[in-house]
Image 1 (cartoon, rainbow, N blue to C red):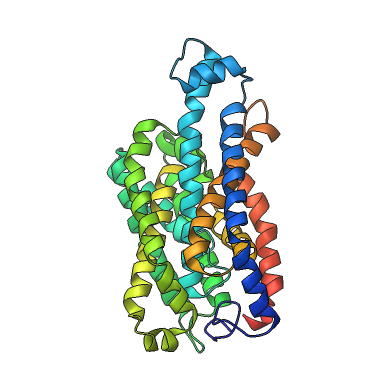
Image 2 (cartoon, rainbow, N blue to C red):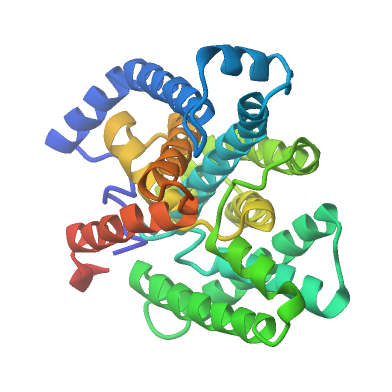
Length: 353
């Protein structure tokens, strides 16, 4: 099913499906505008809402950099958190869209395929065994661990007849993620000196954002976004199937390698800073594909805007439902994403995967 041209992940089909795609292309500008409006509203909510109630004067003062009161300091702390939410949500959504495009797998997601778990394990090993403390080192460890996990899952998923089907990759990724998470906990639990901090990070959250950390991770994420946008046309060609893509002059192996590098960089760098946040890369590309069509040149920027809004809204919900404390955003995205994952599996009819 996965590599058969003519499916929703393959070439353009004639008839009602083709007309549906033309309708989605026609409403693309409206969908993009709506996504930006929702993102702007999510940014405002992220600055306004929190454990401490703040007034408009405090918000204005906090935005201008004044921290003369506790309320103004709270607003000032929410600003880097909001920016990190934008970057992390966009990165995970684009990473998921690229993974789904390059593997032609509707179940692909950095969390489901074990990429986030690989990044987490590498960061924890760096902390526990090599006393790594620099954020820059965490980012490189995250990218390296994510890359190794992606290669391992793909290698396992291709074993046996039929190659890397969506279901085989999803099962290999889920098993790998569970195994790597177990190893991570086995390393952390005996280390009381790092256990509390690592366990909090391992849930996945953006509450610890600071401007220096953002300045470190931003270049990696911006490079990943730029690479993804440049690969949009190539992902469209890969969706036609390897043979057709090669016939159109596409260098299939290089396109796949470039797309994999982009996806791993975005997911690994985000996980190193925020911890593993699952399901953003699964939910957002599917919703954007339904609303705006399958052309990756439009799907990727739309996924970035929608993913940023989704993560910010999830973070605000986490602050509201667990007052006076807050629930980590990774918990909220899991509560939303798990039912969505089941819906996707049922919609794709597992027996055909």
